Length: 283
Image (cartoon, helix red, strand yellow):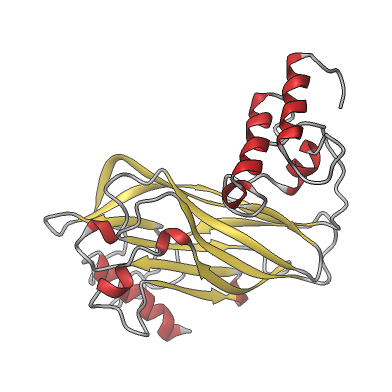
């Protein structure tokens, strides 16, 4: 485990040309930021779960390095695997001379005893066309819910700095989430990172509507709910439960299924729209 942490730190430090100082890039990209978020899902005690970690609002320059950790409640969840997401498939793996079996472009370490997963994507390729430039799923974290968990128990899925030394020559602990790149003068540039936590909530699968028509669970029924249902219907790979940070939640699906037929469709969206316009008074 210690060796793995050293490898992860060394790759990131190399990528950012900071082998003897903090892993955090030394310059900030003015007004540029990246949003990293996790999906909110439900799963039964003793069963499996999948949480999507997504990046959004990626500046046009792109991303050459991601160094972040996911924190969770180890008494509720056990993480068993991590799968690289579609936006990491940039082709950098085949173009990067620094890539070896021990130092892939995408890497992770599960630290179950700490309730943490270290995540990293880093490439030394200068051509930015091989960097991450598209919003979407960065990775999918899979695992199991404790068989002792009770309905209603919940584990936040939050983002923190990776658990390792700042660099290979220091025992000081890393204190930054780093997402950035090297500019044309080989100077490291960091984006401001904004985080949105997700969650895994333990449930029996018998959720009841909290408010019919309220697809986004904001306590109101409006056009935004109609739009979300249509998005789920037309683009389930992005908006269906657990697919990304934009996904509808399990509770939202229950709330929005108002046409009496199992599953969401444009029929549900139409009824929600009619309700908002006052054409119907109940579902």
